[in-house]
Structures are given as C-alpha cells and as structure tokens.
Length: 133
Image 1 (cartoon, rainbow, N blue to C red):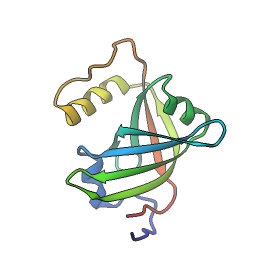
Image 2: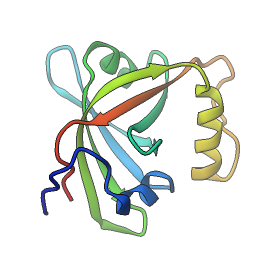
Image 3: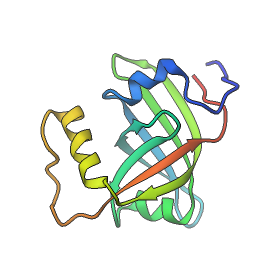
Image 4: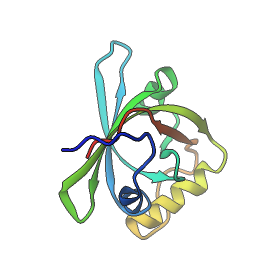
C-alpha cells in the first residue's frame, strides 16, 4: 500500500467512482464505536457522494459527526482498493431522488425500487487525508 500526498481524488480512481465500485462507509456511533455499511458511490470530481434515506443509521451518524472513512474496491479486481478518510461538508435532499435513480440504473440496470415515501439525501464527502492505495 502506498501513501498519496494529495487530498484530491487521483484520476485512476475516478472510473471506479463513476462506475460500479462498491464502497464500505464507516461512520461513528454516539459512543464513538464504528458503524460500517456497504454503499453505492459517485463523485463530482471533488467530493465522494453517498446517497441514503433519511433515518438510516449512516444518515443519523453523519448528521451528528461528519468524520467518515471509505474503503472502495476496484470492481474488476477486489484486491485493488483505495481508502479515504474524509469529512462530510455538504448534504442536500435537492436532486437526491433523481440521483438514487441514476445510481440504481448504473449499479442494477433498473430504476430504484425503494419506497416512494423515502426522503433521500446526498452527502458530499471531501477527502481530508491522503488517499491510500
């Protein structure tokens, strides 16, 4: 594993983030213990985007404490991965339903099957530490 000295997302990983790479998102519970969830990911080139439903544990945790970590695997080679420690800088419900539909088509080939009553939110995570590979 090598250590990157930049806080930006290296170009070689953008294909993973704009493709079908799965990530494991670690958030912090109120007592400081870690909570990990597999998630679909996206990127706008600066932030790593995670979309979730309001009320889920990761949503509650990120609202309270924006410190997170992600492990993201190469979809073609699970032995290649990147680790990111970051901070939630922004979140929005605006466009989140459309975003989850786009992610669902990318990852599953069809529109999102979740409840239409779900309130969706996008979290924008800024890599705050060197990205490890």
